[in-house]
Length: 285
Image 1 (cartoon, rainbow, N blue to C red):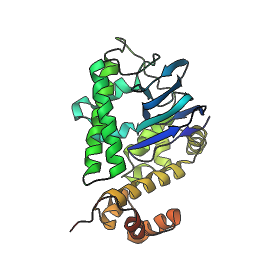
Image 2: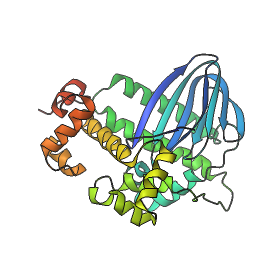
Image 3: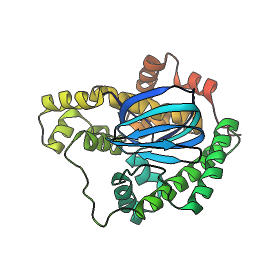
Image 4: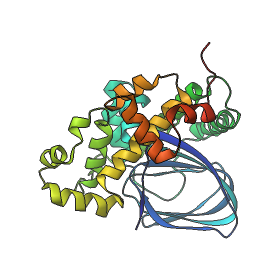
């Protein structure tokens, strides 16, 4: 079963699936919140199956197996985010560990994950607002989207926490998630994401590490790092005023020529040309 990757801290997708569509079972290496804007069908998460309706939201955690059957044309709002996003953006430092634990240990009972009626009423206008900001791309839209994404995550965590058992057991037998988390966490420190360093950190041989990583992620470690850095560069070129030299320094490239060669090889255009064509914020005066 192929598993999907996420190369930026979070992403939002609004997706319409026609009646009769089937999304086959798949997994993620990230968290995914799926909100039903309209339509109905059946959601499958692991061994649980339940009807979905407008206003329902469900959470798919890393290592879950998820599938969909669409009965009537459905508009989905997908919010995908990594544990690194939680650590860096979502909550205050003292609450990070608690929030991660709650999300990782979500017990997947059938039905909507929003158990609190007040929160159901809160989530709908927030999702609508995020969709409007994403579509209109007005000034400061990224800042507003960040704030609303953070709030949505915390609201979901509150609903999960109310229904968690007193004691939970976190599944930690697979190292693939730990390795992905390690790479994301140290993406700004190239010396720490070399294969030999990662193999020592996780106590496995370098040869085995490469085979293990590809088996569980469907790409080599080098490809994952490359794709992750590429998406980070794209995001900074589109949504920030960072100079190319600042991106070079942040992501550990040798110099601007090194970054230019890397980016042009992958995208076919220079970073400057890409920014000019894909700019999402007003240029600074």
